[in-house]
Length: 216
Image (cartoon, rainbow, N blue to C red; front, side):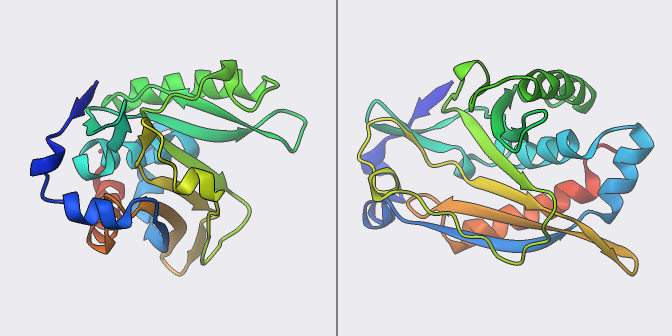
């Protein structure tokens, strides 16, 4: 469900108007050492598990669920996971959406079912679905990148559309173990109209907290 806010009374109104159309990307390593141990003990696969953790963080903080519907600024109560996959026997990718649930076992099972269906598909968006009330996650599993930049056409970035999403966009990279720690690069694009550097710091802090405790 989308809940509109009172824009004129919004404490962020001035910042929103000044920075509408601007975005920035922050890349940092997150420690997944304990996270990997727990998911292996539960027999969980990595991709659905990391998607669960990241989506959980977004759903627990309203600042990461803002958007605009029919010209009204507001936030979605819950976001589902919108993620990329490679189609079978090709180098082409597809998008799939898995409904978010707090139950990790249920989410993991549904993710695996959805993933297998999408991988066998033949279109950019499985079943042509591209809902706006989702949190986007992409993966570059063969590269431990140290930075990542997303570029969008000006008509998109500075869109005056009456319906658009301000939700962050996450890209995860190849994780590597050095010594006793396993680190994974995480790049997140934030929409500056609703998220400042402070919010980026909160996002990465909450992600690390989640990775240290989720699935216990």
